[in-house]
Structures are given as C-alpha cells and as structure tokens.
Image (cartoon, rainbow over all chains, first blue to last red; front, side):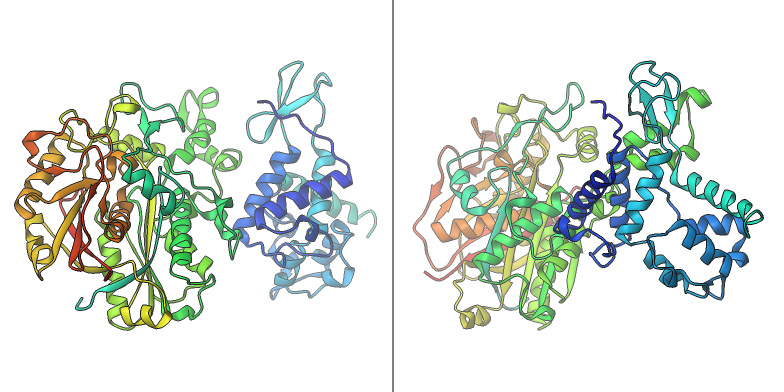
Length: 189
Length: 411
C-alpha cells in the first residue's frame, strides 16, 4: 500500500513524535515534551535507532546518522572543532546558530563533547531537526507538482508522472548547512 | 544431584493456549493445535501446517515494559510461561531476594533469523545499476532501513534468559543451553546444581522455541523432517501413516526450589524432578527410570512422527519400559525444539497431579510394528500412588539422548 508523503505543521510533528517515542519506550506520550531529554525518558542508543526509523517512515524524510558536530568536524577538521575533548569557539558558534532552542551557555566554547551529545538528545532539538529536514524535503513532485508517496527507502515517488526522487539526507543537509554557514562567516564575521 | 527438587510452579504456552490451565484439558481431550500455516507461503510440495502459540505481549502487565520489544516469538512465549509459573508458585515480580533467584533456559538452535534481511537484500541487489550483481556498498543507508533494528537482540540465543532476568529482577546465576530437544534437560541440570550447591533458593527453568519462522522451516524441510500431509492429517506420532512433524511454537517454565524451602513458604508442591540422564543410548537411562521402587506410570516420548525416528525411539522404549503407556505432545503442539523437555516436564507434573496421561493427538492407526503401548483415543487414567513417576525422553539431532524423571507430590 502506498504511503502518502505528509506535510505536518509543528503541532502534528510534536504529536507524532510523542507517539513514536511513547511507543518505543513504553511510556506516556505526554512525557515527551521539552525540556525532557530522550535519555532521561529511558532511551538507549538502540532505541534511538528505532525512533529515528519511525520518524523517517512517518514523515517521509531521512534523518541524519551523525550529528551536526560530526558534520562540522568533517568540514572544518577535527582540531578546529574539538580540543581536549571540548568544543572550540568555532564549534560553539556553529552549534548555537544551528540550535537556537538551546540555552547558549549549554553550548559555550569549552563545553565537553559528552555534554554536547546530551544536548542532542533534547526533545526540542529533535523536533527542530525534524521540522528543518521537512522544510527541505520535497512534498510535491519536483517534476510535475503531483502528489508523492513513499518509494524505496530514501526515495519518494510521484503518483502522477511515476518518477522517483531521492530525499535529501539529514547528513547531507547538515554538511551543506555547515559549509554555507562557514562561508558566510567571511561576510559577517 | 542427590536430592529431588520441588516444583512449585508450572507455565505452558503452546498452540493449545496461552497458559497451562487452558492447554491441559485440551491436551487430555486429544485436541491438536496444528492448523494450516498462514505466516508465509511455504515452499510448494512441502509442509503446509504449523502449531502457532497464541502468545501476545499484552497478555500480562510487565514490570519493565520496554525490553519486551526486544523479545522474539520464542522469548515472548518463554517470558509468558515464566509469569504463569511464578503466579502458581506465589513468587512476586520483581522477585524478592534477587541474588538468590537463578534462571536456566533452553532456547532454539536456529539463531539468526536471516529472513529479516530479505527486503534489504532486494534493495542492495543493484539490478539496474550493476547488471544484476549484489552491491555490498548498498547494504548500508537505504537498505539498512529495511532491517529490523532489533534483529540481533531478537535472535540471540540467550535473549530469553537476559530479558527474563531484566523483567524479574533476578540476579542469581543464569544459564542458556542450545541443543535442540535435549537442551531442556541441561537447563534442568544446571538449575538442580544451583539449588543443590546453595547458589540459589529459587531456580526458574524455561524452555522456549519458535520454529515457525522461515529459516527454521526451510532447514527442517531440507532435512526431510517435515510432514507433507494436509493440515488435518499432518504430524501423527507413532501412526502407521506418519510422515514427519510440523514446526511449532511453545514454551514451558518450572519453578524449582528445595522441598524444605517450599514447605517453609507454605506453597503446594506439584511434584519433583527426581533425576536426569543423558547419553548415546536411551537404554542407559534404565537405572534412573527403573530404580527405587518407583512405579513408572507413563513415558512422554519425543514422538517426532518420522518413520525412522519413531521406530528408533520405540525400540529404546520397548527395552527400557516395556508395556508402559507412552504418549507424546508432538501431535498436539507440533515439534517444539528446545522447549521439548520443559513441555514434557510440565505435562508430566500435571499428569501426576491428576493421574491422567494425555493421548497422542492425531494417532489414528497405531503402527503395530513399533510395539508401543501408545495412549490412543482417550487419556490413560490410573489410581494415583505415592511412588508414581513419569519419564520424559528426547533426543537431539546430534545423537544425544536424554531422560528426566518426574515424580508426583505426596497425596
């Protein structure tokens, strides 16, 4: 059966994400709201995989397999991002820009990477991440404007012209965003 | 082992029901849980029937709900059987003195369920891109999204004891044995050793298997062990027209403790596990089964329903316990692999409690050449006696034979 691609608003995203996490962790979905963190709600690494896959299936998007900090490391180089197990001023700037929902002091230069990784588990961070990927993922056929359904994993298919289109991956979007942001630094240092 | 262990709780999940209370009367009435297989389309010309257990995760309130999602079918059946056994034994969940409660499990030999990868392999089989060659690089990314993220946990042989200990809060010794139908005997022996050596006060034995998945099905099919008869006629142990077994799903659990401990807790004892034996020839079990002035009220055989397998088993039983009533659960529950001996033990305990040995379900025309006193038609009933015993026997495909002696509780 074809699964139509959806265009949820913020409330839909919140409700669906709460349902997904609630089912995965066998907890009351009402608990899945900011400022809760997924690990505090009982999620372990393997649960995060299930949650991410369910998010992908629900919203027809491709979640990143790595964090935006990893993307920054790929673009800028390890030493430009992490020194002595803590984030550098450059990394801090990128993360604060990327995650406006997080209090800036939690992403200050010198914050241990382990603490930053905890930030990535925030419900608010996941909600913003999902919304951000949705904004950049096709909701209508780029070729003919027709409706889309889920295709093979990582792709959507037009119900009108039958063309398949790849979905941008969260990792691609993170990398592109870091590159664009760093390039913009020269214009607004 | 020098001292019999008291059994204070029994649980049984099988094609005849999600608990022993429901399955026992059905078993005694000669019912069979074998039905047409619907989980997948079986290979043409092969077996078309199976014995699926009605096990559902929502059947009980779990102490730790989240790990339940890691349970495959066998582990779920096993956990449900244990929960039933603990209720009978009046043991709360989580268990009280955690370090004094152990778990000994017998689980399936099939391990990895490779069927979980079929959909991903379809994606990775890069027909249009690479001329029909398998493109390993494509196994990551999109293809990986079609693989059950919990496949490894759900197919680990020792998932059952691990998840069970989490659910129960048990922190005593835990064991896992993977040796087909005789695995249950080794689980019983480990539990008895833990009790006798004082490592635990309560030992939970559980055997669980789910052979109704595609990999196990294909393996048994390839070995020529599965019945090819239509579902109503498939799997007929000791029958003249037997042609193999059907895959089943089942679990059975026993709560064991030292007799004095059971008395001190004021919990009724259902019966005792009085001795175990394993070796290459079942007749070697004679000292265990025939000693001590016990009256062998019956034998619960493997009854694999294959022409050669039943003939070999019958030859051993004729020598070991001539004229003793023989039954088998395979016609009712299908072949249940590692759950075999715990299921047999559960049935033996209930048989000794009630003085009733269930008939061999689906046995219509006994094979006279086998020379067995197979229980046919209705249940075999006898007047209970304090020395009554029932023997459970099985063999693995590697040639190991096993026997477990179960005795009744004093009237």
